[in-house]
Length: 240
Image (cartoon, rainbow, N blue to C red):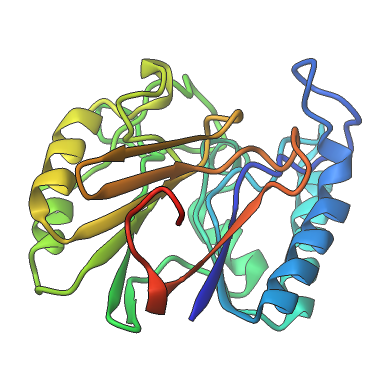
């Protein structure tokens, strides 16, 4: 199966934020991404988080999220949506997925490849992000032991998906507080073939041993900021 990936749409009514983010253009970019995924024959898409930004009122936030939802559902392609820090600082998890009518990240195996979804929308003290906000640089993957144990539950190769960054080549402020332990566990598992991330808007690509790390460039700042891989032909080499 081909799987389409994208990250960091930051969709909102604002034309420009942070000097380079063209938030209001992201909806049209997502339409273009899904047209591309359909043309490529993707059977699944994964949003790596930060679909929206705050719009000034909760009603407006809901409106924008529903617009994104409508693009996704009208595509006819099943989509998994991870929450990023901007999503979690705007919506509680329950409300977010209720508006979508699904799209929760639930692990599965496709064509012999485990898809494992991780969530770092937690503060270092273990509390989940809420719309009350907080320091986005304070992030943490809870139940680290359980997550690492899941890598060895079978002998099936795996791909890991999360919004935040485990790749140590990226700036520290984008990485969970337990990123080093996760990195070691992933790379020592012998099963993980790739890690797909968002959050770091320029994007990146690094290979450590047999593990490919791909950080998707932000939809709100780049053109054609999406990625497709085929689970049946997935190999770890520079041509992937």
